[in-house]
Structures are given as C-alpha cells and as structure tokens.
Amino acid sequence: MNWTLALPILVPFCAAALAFLLRNRRGSGWISVGGSVLSLILALQLLAEVLRHGVIATQMSAWAAPFGITLAADYLSAAMVLITAIIGLAVALWGMAEVGQISARMGWHGLFQTLIGGVTGAFLTGDLFNLYVWFEVLLISSFGLLVIGGQRKAVDGAVKYVTLNLISTVLFLCAAGLTYGATGTLNMADLRAAVAAHPDQGLMTVIAMMFMIGFGLKAAVFPLFFWLPASYHTPHYAVSAVFAGLLTKVGVYALIRVFTLIFVGDQGYTHEILLWVACLTMLTGVLGAAAQSDFRKILSFHIISQIGYMVLGLALMTPLAVMGGVFYLLHHIIVKANLFLVAGVSRRLTGSSDLYAIGGLYRSAPLLAVLFLIPAFSLAGFPPLSGFWAKYVLVKASLDLGQGLVAFVALLTGLLTIFSMTKIWAEAFWKAHPDGRQPRLASIPARARVLLLSPMIALALMTVLIGLFPDPFVTFATTGAEQLLDPSAYVATVLERGAE
Amino acid sequence: METVLAILSGVLSACAVWLMLSGNLLRFLFGLLLLSNAVNLAIFAAGRLTEGAPPLLGQGGALPGHQMANSLPQALLLTAIVIGFGLFAFALALTIRAYRAFGHLEVDRMRLAEPEEGGK
Image 1 (tube, rainbow over the protein chains, first blue to last red):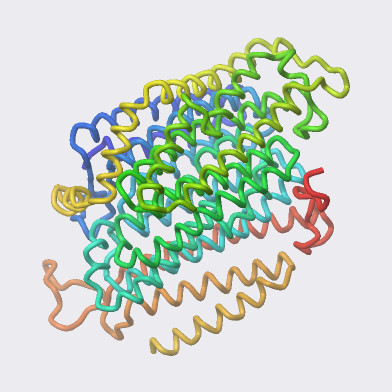
Image 2 (image 1 turned 180 degrees about the vertical axis):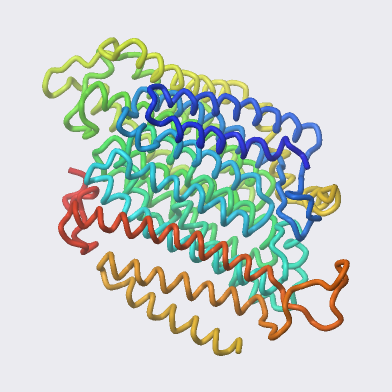
C-alpha cells in the first residue's frame, strides 16, 4: 500500500471532520486552511513521486489488481491533484474573509474540504465504479455549498443544478453497470484490453456514448450546459470560484481518461462527435456571454466556451492536440478561479455584480484592476500569458490536421472572449461609478484585505510565470499527453506492480 | 428472468421520462427515483442471475464444485441504492425549501436566478 497516493484523499476528509465538529468555534476556517496546506505538501510529494517513476499505482486493502480498487496517478492525475490543492488553499484562505459565521456554523468549511477530497479522489482512482462514488461525494458536498447562505436565488439555482446533475449521475451509473456486465471488470487499466477484445464493438460504442453524455453533462458541454449559467452566479463567491475552477474540469478529466484509455476503438465515430461538440461548445458559450451583463454570469458562460477548447484537444487525438488540451486544463483552472475571486472583491467594493450598476474600480482600486487584467488577458489568449500558449498549441494542432474550420472557430472564440472581457473592463473598471462611489480596497478591514488579496496575487503570479516560462510546463504536458495516448505504462503499472 | 427484468427496467425508464417531462418539480423527483431504480435493475440483470448458488466458498477457501453467484453486482447495487437514497433525501429537502421560497413547484416559473429579459 502506497501512502503517497492515499494521503491526498485522506487529509481533506480528516480536515472536514474536524472542521465540522468544531464548526461553532470562531476560526474553524483555520482548520480548513491547515488541511489545505497539508494537502498542498502531499500533492507536491505525489508529483515528485510521479516525476520519478512515470506512473504509480496502489491497491486498496491489498486486493490484487483487476479485483480490488486501484489508486493510480500518471502525469495528468498528479498535476490535477496539485492544482486542486492550490485552488483549495487559495479559496480556503479567501473564504475566511467572505464566508460569515452563520455559514460557518452550517458547516461550510467542512463541506468545502469534503468537496476537495471528492475531487482529489476522482483524479486518483483507477476504478470506474469508484469514480462514480467520488463523483457522488463531490456532488453532494457541492449541493450543500450551493444552498448554504440560503438566498431565494440560490435555491432556484440549486434546483436546476441538482436535478440535471442527478440525471448525469444516473447515466454514468448505468454505463458503469453495463460495462461490468459486458466485460466483467471495472478496473480502467484492465478495461482497455477487455473493451478492445469484446466481440460486439457496436455495444461498446453505445456504452461509450452513455459515458460521453454523462460526463458531458458534468463538464457542461453543448448542448448539456444549461444548469451551469443557471446556478454558478447564485452562491457565495468562494463557492463560485471553486466550482468554476474545479467541478466542470472533473467532467473534462473523466472524458479525457475514458476516451484515451478505454473507448478508443471507434474514434471515427466518438471523437468526431466530440469535435463537433467542442466547436459548438466554444461558440455557444462565448455568444451566451456576450448577451449577459452580470459579472459572474459572463464568467460562467466563459467557463462553457473554455471547456470547448479542452474537449477540442481530446477530440483531435494527436499528441500535440492532447498536450494542448492538458495544458489548457491546467492553466484554465487557475485563471478562472482567480477571475471569480476578482468578481467577489469587486462586488464587495461596489455593492453589486450588475455591470451597469457598478464602476470606477480602475481609479479607486488600481491593484484590483491589475489583478483582473492578468487572468482576463490570459483567458482571451494574449501573449505572453499562459492562455496564449494553450490556444496557440490547439490552433496549431487543428491546422496540422487540416481542420481549418476548427482553427477558425477557436480563434473566433478567442476574439469574442476579448469582447466580453472588454465589456467587464469598460463597465466595472473604466467608467465612473453611477452613484459616484469611490470604492477603495482600503475600506476593507486589514485582516480581510490580506486574506482576500494574497490568494489572488499568488494565482495571478502563477499565470504570469506559466506564460513567461512555458518550457517546463509544455514539457510536462507533452509527457502527460504521451502517457495518455500510449497508456501501456499505466496499464502495466496498475496490473503488475499494483499487486504488491 | 433477464428478459423480464429488462422489460421492467424499460417500462420504469419510460414512466420516469414521462414524469420528468411534466414540469413539476415533485413529479420530476419521482421520475428520477423510478429512473435510478430502472438503472439498478439493469445493473442487476447485466451482472447475470444465478439461481440457488450462494456466493460462498467451501472450507479453507476452496472453490465450490458447481457454479457460484457473482456477488459484485449486488455490492455495486447496494452502494448505488444507498447513495441514491441520500441524494434523493437531499433533493426532497431542496424541493420543500423551493416550495417555501416560491409557493409553487412549476419549474418553468422558477426564473429568479435567470430573469426573462436577459440578464437585467
């Protein structure tokens, strides 16, 4: 049993239990912060281990490989776990200043850690049914986080979020059950050979499509995204930030995992559909954003259009494209969570998230303006920020395959993203506040100011760093993509050495 | 037996879809409950039914001479039922909360988070 793989999952749950038991004490949020710091250290250790060995795997309760539950980490998993820990720590700190005592008493910090634990578990598991269980863990904690704070608007958002996500869960469960019925195994590494060897490939494609719809609903791709813009702008800003950063990406991760490792038999069919889905997701998301005038709603629609880029990387299935998709996934989580945090501070300063009712932030809070511009430019793909490299690689990969139309859609989406970001900039930052307010950062108490700004500055610095020194990240993503496209090392590690 | 279960699962799914399309949140939930049970039955049937062969090993862990039931699908089902129950309880509580907040359960009229005149 390899503790490097198990501890990143265990620690958030221990922190959750402690934070929940002590939820009535002042400062119970520090338990959550402490847990997140520990998670970050463990995630770094996991990444170091993965960098040394390539792929690592372990069996829970020492049941040998295809029968017991496997935990496995390749480059993609390890990077996702690390980025989950980073966002977890950033939002745990930020949330200390935003989440009030009432929400804390309802167990906000405990639920937050459970969510982080569930997300980490989903990234590390090597078992299809176990993946379903982790989805449920993160889903039920996200339900709780969504309604705590309890305004009527949040209840409305939660109804749509809960119902549509439950449908996706049922589909996923059904697909997992049928996979077991058809192949007799649920271990993802074992499934690769079992699915390929199955006599009825048509049946396998049907099951693959059920997975695609189930995960697609979670990832909010076209035409299954309607729950996202209906709910992401209703809860606490800290919740929006962690949802925007991590939750849809779990769906994307599951899509990447299942459609590179298991269902690769009929790529002309499945990946062709993914390609169309990716293009339409990019376009509808960005066009939806153009029609909105609420800070968080614009950002929510942009999540959808960005998901399109990641799915595009998967759909093209060349080493360069998958590398671009992985790079996009990692860069996007940091950028998007940070933008929602900026939206939260702007709401606090100006008193509203309606862009027509706020303004004047550039003059009165220039630091916030800088903190907005960095992730916003990165999202739109301006050089030298991280988003530029991600978009560049994906566009190049589509052109290499002669998919001119796809490259055009990707570039057009980038252009329209700039339009939306300019809109936020012009309304919230550039024009004067309609009521003549001068919202200053200094008006926030010093302690809260530090808690709010330090995670945002750290995330912005990461965006700049990835942009200025993309080499190690590109090398990392390239190796990650190679592992995804040729998972023989993953399969071998899980099935052979996994038995120790 | 598998055929009966497959047909039953199909009928349950059909009823579930009909209920879920009705536009009332409570009916939707009942539909979801039926759908998750339909899926549970499907998994049960997909895991092969073996009559009168308990999944028990002989003395000293020896394999029994005759066929033996596979207990894994049942274990999966049990997990799925427990999780489904928890989620349904939450969804029901949310429905009550929504009824208190809006005074009705017509999903088409729940437009608080997304007002009709785009974004205002």
